[in-house]
Each structure stands twice: as structure tokens, then as C-alpha cells.
Image 1: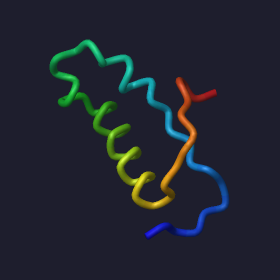
Image 2: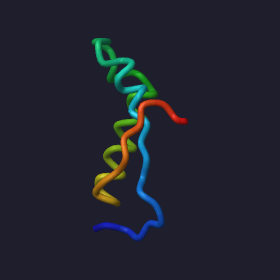
Image 3: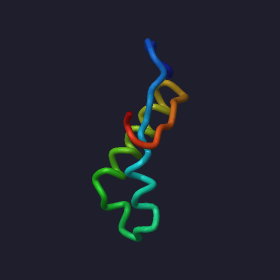
Length: 55
């Protein structure tokens, strides 16, 4: 079920892309954080902005 929110969620996926060639990327804390953010945001808002690096 979607929740009320006042802005569109923004997710920085740079940690995920930085480890894309690493066979042990699943063990990286930054990768795990991005995956958790993606999961939570998809469940709660249903959509989000993707950025490469926080500006």
C-alpha cells in the first residue's frame, strides 16, 4: 500500500554501479543499502528518481 509523501524519492545508485563488476558485490554495505532503498521505495511510493552521485 502506498503512503502519503511530499516529494518524489531520490535514490543514488552510484554504489551499486561502482561494484557491478565485483563478484562479491552482494557483500558490500553500500550495495546492500541501495538495494534496501530500492525495495522500500518501490513498496511504499511505487516510483523514484535515480541519480548517479548526490549533488
